[in-house]
Amino acid sequence: MLSAQAPVVQSPLGSAEVARRLVSLLLQGGYKPGDRLPAERQLGHDLGVGRSVVREALRSLSLLGIVDMRQGAGTYLTQVADEPVAKASELGRLLSARRVADLSTVSVHLEAVMAGFAAERRSEAAIADLDRLHADVASDRRPLSAIQIEHRFHTTVWSAATNHVLAEILASIRALLDAPLGRSMSATIDRRWIVDDHLQITEAIRYRDADMARAAMSSHMGRIGVGLRAFLEPLGDPRVEGSERGEHAVDDLQSPVDVLARDRT
Amino acid sequence: MTEPNLTTGVTVARKVLALLASNGLREGDRIPSERVLATELRVKRSVVREALRSLMLLGLLESRAGSGTFVAGADSEWVSTAIEWGLVLGVRNTVDLVEARSQLEVLAARLAAERRTAEDLDELRGIIEAMAVASDDRPRLTELDLAFHLGLARASHSNVLMHLLDSVRTLLKVWIARVLASKPAAELQGEYVEHGQILDAVIAADGDLAERLMREAMRKGQQSLAATLQAAASSETDERTDRLLVIRGTGATERLRPAPVLHEASR
View 1 (cartoon, each protein chain N blue to C red):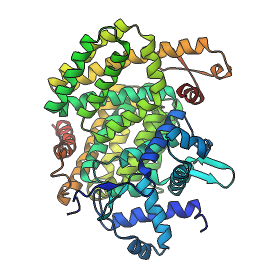
View 2: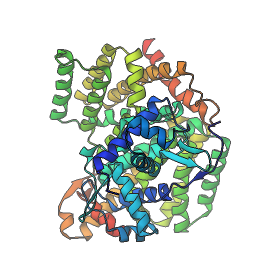
View 3: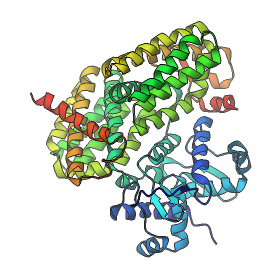
């Protein structure tokens, strides 16, 4: 019923397209958080739309926390500290099972890549960070949930890997998957083996063994995927079926099982 | 009407999302009316309307003639848009971008081998055949090179990966063009052999091989880029070139702040 194919009408501004072009423009222009954007007239010219459309688009972006319109002082790309809606974890709760599968495929692969980079490039300071994290977790002074431990560990590995772009991509994906992961973890995943996985990956990074780091990260992500699948499956999410690429959604979440099976035999 | 301040806007937009999610809505579902949302959130309708417009701009909501407003469907681009905004708002530099692009291309090659359809293969074969006969037509070869990478990304059947690659390529556009321009046409054309081998691996559904071949192709590309960056650094001697960074594993350099240069070059 809901998928009735009524045509998608332009939003009042004709704006989704304007926003997309604006992202491209800002990406190509190399703007950074805190930078001042060109004047509205200039943006309108570059995007091939009227100034009022640009103004509407900027206004909407400011409501999303992406730009900051300062009265009489121009428009600025927001500082990350403002937590724009585009990065909000609330977004993740709206994801279909198919989309969760797609995001998790990309993140499983990139997490393994980053673990390999971390092993090749880690500084002594990065190792100290990882050790400190493990000490915090072990001390239990401030009990952390499984998902908090996960976040802190992966963020630390990304810093050790020193690729900001991949870290940014993974952070966005993780924010989106936060809700489904959080629910699946509390339901099905034992915190202790997560910590064991983390320790194993840390050792591989410490000894600069990139192959081992990648392999350990892959099986770790595989185990997380099993939990995610176990969580999504009983929901019988109908959105997986009937979609042209629905079969991949299932495949993607099954492959970690193979990893797990291999590990145990 | 006074301008709602930034914090209110962000808060309301997030509250709308949280409310939709707690009502069990997912991609493709119809959302409640403005009036209902306003009542639930205890804010004015005009404030809700603003928030909905912003979320439409992000591509997260779409309105359909005569049937209301919906959470965009699972084929829509909002997830990629959200990740793209993350990239816009995050730290980035050319070295990391080049490396990220390589890794994404490698994943695309693997997934393409695992998931390609007959139509995907037809398209990719067509591109390789065109490359083989394009001889020294440089613009055509450049175009086909891009078409091959786009075709592989499509064959990966990962919406997220396809759009990520697109954003990262956009960011590297100027550099990729420089690398291609610096190569002799003969070398460009020779690449069809390399691309053909990747395609063979994809046809054979051999993900490991496709991944390995793409990694090798990307490594060569990175070397060419490194050489290009080095040439650029030595030929331009303004104040921006005095802060140089070594590209990992290649010994070449890049500017620490490539952004302004990219901006000028794209004009």
